[in-house]
Length: 103
Image (cartoon, rainbow, N blue to C red; front, top):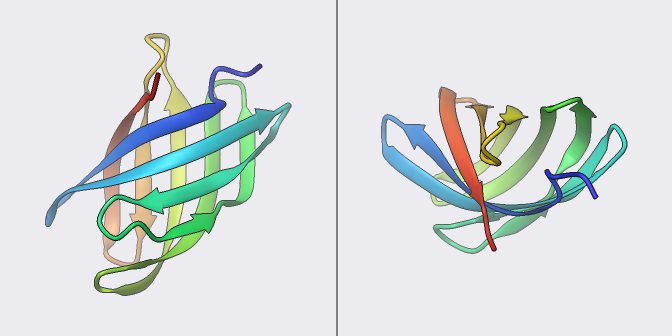
């Protein structure tokens, strides 16, 4: 099983403060599937066009958040310490994120 597969607690660091979500990911070869659950309201959505390339990954999703429907693009990396980090881009800008795997 790929080390990216599992449930991740993700924090996106925005100018409006930290935004929390759970990303449930399944890696299969170079394909990445799963869902994102918003930490603020519990809304969830499937990830789209998920890709893996070594320790790098990317996907996008659309999610209803408190300020309305928004599209997100994720680009990240699985680090040697088992955590993830990267960038989350939406219409409001690009923000850094980090994440830890739930036990």
